[in-house]
Length: 190
Image (cartoon, rainbow, N blue to C red; front, side, top):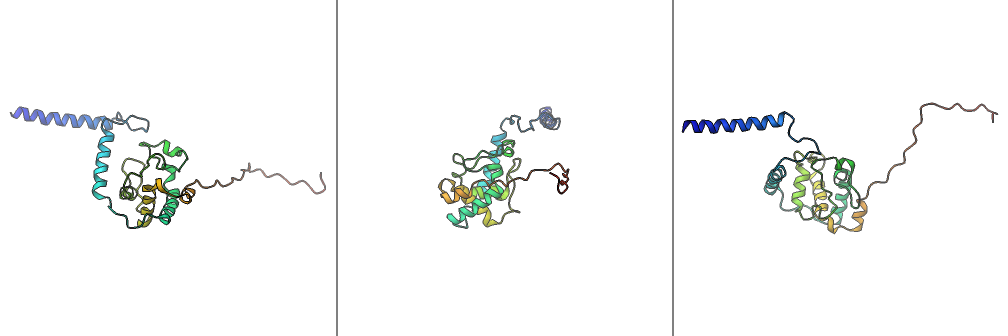
């Protein structure tokens, strides 16, 4: 019996060392284009969903109304659109190069089927091992709720809110000069 128990302990240590070696030797997928590990998505989503379900607020402290959506649109354009895109627009090169890819929040359902409290939790806390940062140090609580309520109701927003969710007009660029100044022609020269 003792040999059996020692064999189990040795086998467990061997598996643990093998996994450790697999990751630190550079054999594990780490590049954006690499295929995910088996069960990677299942385990990551399971842990995230359980944490959100346990901690997300069940009610919003502000009303889901036009003024909230307009304020949320401004916040979204300033902080979110670079990764999550704007209505009718493609996602940026930054978003296309990320793994996991950030969801385009104005395509399909986006997060309109999620409770606003779930989106608020994600905005406030961020999501580890993704590009989703925590905004709790950059936005106040009201601002986080405004953008969360906008996204939870994105399928119901008015044309005025959609108008605010357009990309900013590009600023004209001034041509660069080569640094060589042309000499002015002398007076009287043609």
